[in-house]
Image 1 (cartoon, rainbow, N blue to C red):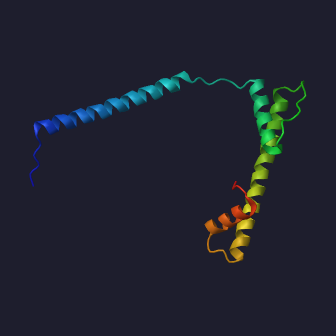
Image 2: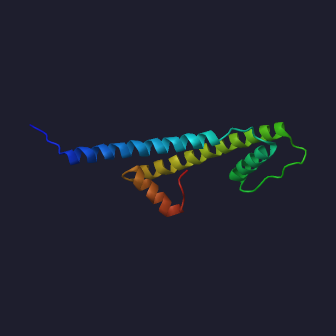
Length: 128
């Protein structure tokens, strides 16, 4: 088997390959520039307050009351407490969902996808 390339095809292929490598080089240099622009900074007290408030609201649905005298240590301790409570709540919700799916499976549902669909239809729920 003999493969013949015309000069036109070789030049077109060469141009295409160079274009692809030029594009890749351009994209990588932009990524490098973007990463170089990002500088790590230490979290401030305002950052800690915002993280605590957001996590508390995710768990309880409302923003917390925070005493004005709270400092870095108080925010850090409370944020860890709220994060562990949130993780526990998510585990509990997943357990309830697994139990509901298993209950559907026990009542004759053919597969898990159908059980999830039945539960979504019955309770208008979202899966965690």
